[in-house]
Image 1: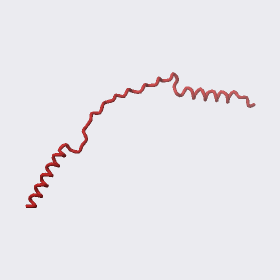
Image 2: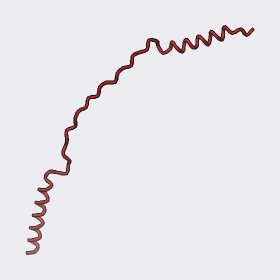
Image 3: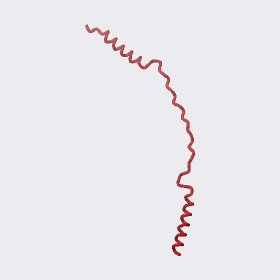
Image 4: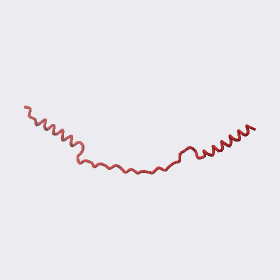
Length: 71
């Protein structure tokens, strides 16, 4: 009789615990708001190409070297 009572109590405890866990362990999903990011502003292109300034500097250095009077 004690085994039957123990088994009945274990079965009842299992059913109660099982129905308590019916929802599962996962957290409720929340809806994430969508944030739209504006594109970065594009910088205006310069009026001179990138090689013009170094070419002017080199030409000035060559001009100074040629114009110097070493004789």
